[in-house]
Image (cartoon, rainbow, N blue to C red; front, side):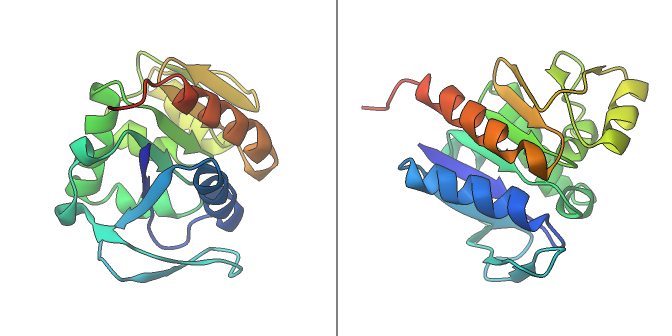
Length: 174
């Protein structure tokens, strides 16, 4: 499967690196999509650096089978850009798998794609989602059809496990 990972500055190091590595280890092709192709992005803990493979204008949601949205400051930075929000919205509307952890659901809020899903997020984002009318629970991982959400770095093993299960359910392209 081809997975787009939307990434901006100050992403949460582990919420990017661990799912990214697990997806690749499972045989999926992961493309880092950001505001500027070739940009070097630093994690908010300073432990991980990632290079943007393609910009939003270089890709289309149809090019990918699933979407990964790591947390940290990245989702807030990206949701200020219409192209990033439209990219995320297209995945949800197409029913493609979307994996969002911690602050990741901020992009779902900006895309107005949260109302028909049961989900979780970082505690402050849970409050924002509830106020917006989302069905929010405080659990380590929530799977609702194509959407997999988790709250924080300690939830990463469950987040990875459930995200990979969702990908396994997609029929392989011939």
